[in-house]
Length: 177
Image 1 (tube, helix red, strand yellow):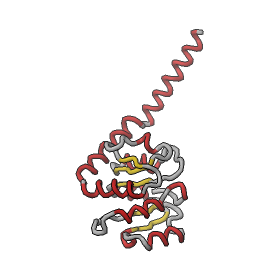
Image 2: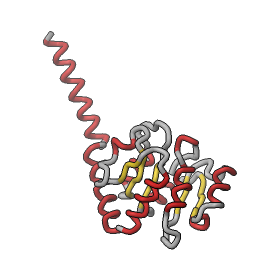
Image 3: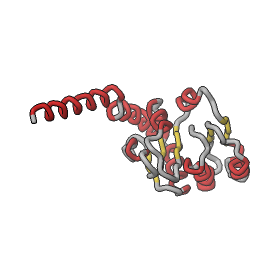
Image 4: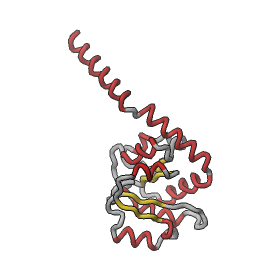
């Protein structure tokens, strides 16, 4: 669920399929602008999972799609801020697998609410996808815990209250000085 830009690492996800068991019934849904790029399509065509890639391109119903998935992978290879796609996945109880690039690791309690793997490490991504596939009850539980983590740690209303309180405290300090 992201636009296809080099920093998003979609090519690493496609490469990860080489390390997955061929008999596993795992499908990959690519949603976002640019997923039909010729170089990406060529890479998918030679993947052992070529027939299990579903390239949807840009969609207005991406949230409905993510809510129907078990796992969301953001294999970013370069700095990302706080990726909206990961937050959305967690809100919909879709277990995230992310890399150490940028802000993604801040969202995930590794091994509890999802997985964090090294950048550009297709075997590590495949290992986590395989584990989640083979441990579906744990995958579901991780997704549920991801939702709780987002609600507790990244709630907009709570963040606004904390920011307001900080401003009031700073103002009170300034006035008493």
